[in-house]
Length: 156
Ligand SMILES: O=c1ccn([C@H]2C[C@H](O)[C@@H](COP(=O)(O)OP(=O)(O)OP(=O)(O)O)O2)c(=O)[nH]1
Image 1: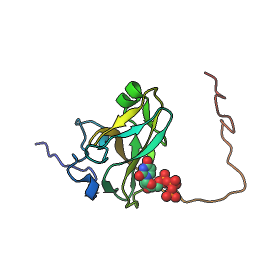
Image 2: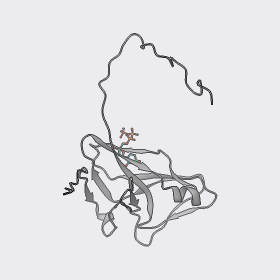
Image 3: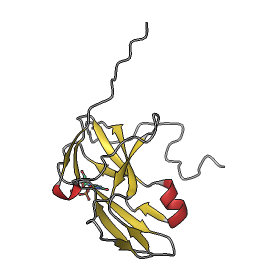
């Protein structure tokens, strides 16, 4: 007998007034890593991002990211390829103690103005484990084979 138990962490969300009526984020496929986030711009309005410019796009949602996790806001590859639209601060970090509206910082690296209307899927959000380290100041770094080599020090 196979026992199926859903061990995924629960993600509570709160809808803000301007998020009313929007489809909630869902995983589009069974194995999708991210859930798509929708633009909560006013109905009938268009938010235009001109080439080279950036804007903060509301989602109309507050998420209670569970303790021990973070949410990462990432670009959608289709928008990046077709329109040059990406997240400027990718991956955007949503802290588990953040209780404000999740917003998406988009930048238009394309050649054309990009128009965002209500409900458009503008980015995706990935829930990932996150830990805090204990921080200690020490006098010297321990020795390793790599040492201070980096930035291509091992060749191509
Ligand atoms: O793309 C993003 C990035 C961040 N945030 C929210 C959630 C996050 O928990 C908070 C703070 O983000 P971050 O730590 O990146 O901002 P900061 O510039 O370091 O500001 P702060 O001093 O508020 O931490 O802003 C978003 O809504 N979208």
